[in-house]
Length: 287
Image 1 (cartoon, rainbow, N blue to C red):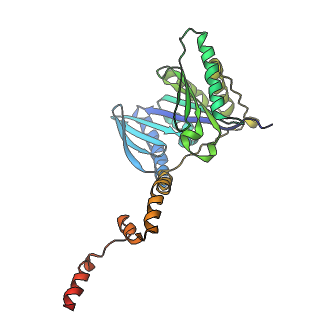
Image 2 (image 1 turned 30 degrees about the horizontal axis):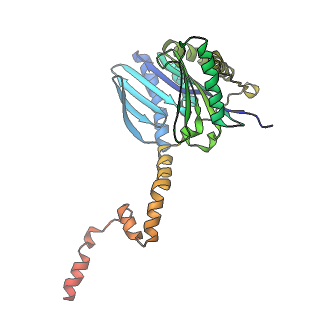
Image 3 (image 1 turned 60 degrees about the vertical axis):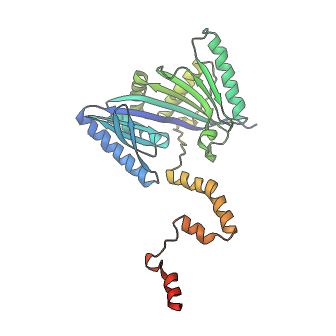
């Protein structure tokens, strides 16, 4: 009988800051190296700002400066690869997300629905003091939220494939716990000093969801860190959009014999300004 399988376990998001000049410089240097790699991996650089910080965003990293302060936010594969180094050179950690991703042997929607019912039963014991919220959309996305976003710890369970559209996450449920402020700093600092972090990531995921009445079984093989983050660069996203949204239109025009006009519209054929008047010149010469 096929069983559920763990395909991802680790840090999915981290926000760190540095206030002292001696600390700010190493953080900004590290973040700049990560940013450079993201840019050369096919991601676009865009202006970014938050709470008075101003800087740039590229792929899975955001960097901002406000006076002598620096802030860095990393997500997805970038956070999984670099969170330890970022935490080590930061003055503070204000957000730290841990995740476990499980490929379902059965329906993803049924699993999340079962988690919803279990969380509601648990919330009834606390006479409405615990928040359980869920959102479903017409494209198959289904997300269950546990707790308040303003609290120190907040959880969510969702269909990872519906959100990412990556084949790696087909039939996968993402269990995610967001630690904020003091809770984020404490957890990240402890984990940064650990050698093998996978058992601790598993324990924190399980601990939160079980405390909300939601069963979650995580058994990392031999304690090995499981990291299967998958992201697409901006170039890959643009190419996917071209294939899905533009290619059918271009193909229809090509089939209609409009190939040259299509190439000109796309800027793939550039007129030679020295030859723009050639037809008129030839006509005058013949006359």
